[in-house]
Image 1: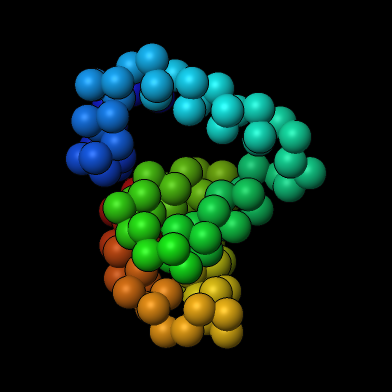
Image 2: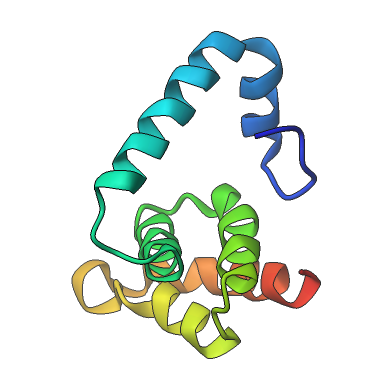
Length: 106
């Protein structure tokens, strides 16, 4: 992963200031991805839902753009963001404008 305008400022700082840690992180992410039975698009949609539920909106632009690149529709992104609604409540709606702006930009 290289500097990208879709990555949050915090993640871009992580890339720049802690490259060894960032590489270890990416290695772990890749290994977990290989172990997953989910296809890439579904995995991104699940991750978007987790980011929304965890209130980690800064990661949404990158992952929404990736989901769109993998064929996710705007409605699928909305559904992913709102999937946590029954479990964590309306906190997930805070992620909706961030996710939709990222989808519409990419």
